[in-house]
Length: 356
Image (tube, rainbow, N blue to C red):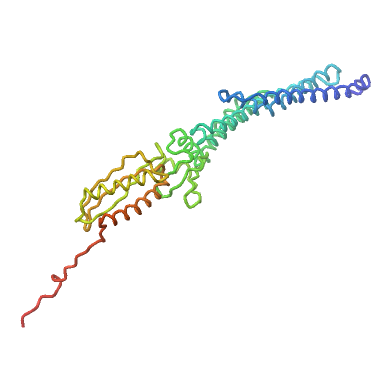
């Protein structure tokens, strides 16, 4: 090696200078090309091309490094500054660099693709974290096997040992895997979606904040979170108030005196109900409200008025406005909402007089 250095005293300097110039020129060309492509107006009909452009920056940096590794190898061989064994090692390093660049590109592309379609697809938005996590694990696993194959390591025994190890890990992580696959089931079956207002069988109500790979977060009306493991949630009874649509009926129970004219009561009640549905900001003004009499109670004849609200949370305000308006209208019309009446028969409870 000393003889080579003596024969070519300036060879290392020339190699280093050429390599530096190559790196700078390639990096500048990459920046110019990417900047020019980013100036092109993105097309809404071609989101994949835009995502490809965003995902290219880091992989291109790695490819520039790989290209210069090959250039370095060529210059060193040309100047007889490297042995054949070391040249093979440099070649292996360059091949690994290419694999790493492809892995980085695949991971960034999948991540950006999931983020893009989460804005337009309920399924992707609900399962975004699961998709990103699963794709990253698959890419790293496949990339690791490819790198081992590139290094000349036989992966067949490794795959066989991984099968046994995976079985042991699966048994040890059974609750975690159960939650993961339950989360996948929730995403595919779609009983709930992010943003839905739901009620659990344990009584908690709230908006679905996030469906993760292990648990689902539900934000309650009191501004606190219920974190439910996916395995428990998939086996629970869930009431989804936003499915199949957010509109829902709002029943209101009312009772009137037995002496009331029921036709008059029904007419007045429907007028008030239609007025509320038309005037209230969360009412459905084209809904055909109706009244159903259903019970002869102990002190009143009971009936139900059916209203309609835009979503579950609005039902409380619609019902409150209707009760206030109906109470005022009944008072104007002389319709009585009776108090509960109880008749006490004291005569039969008096002790019988005994003859002396």
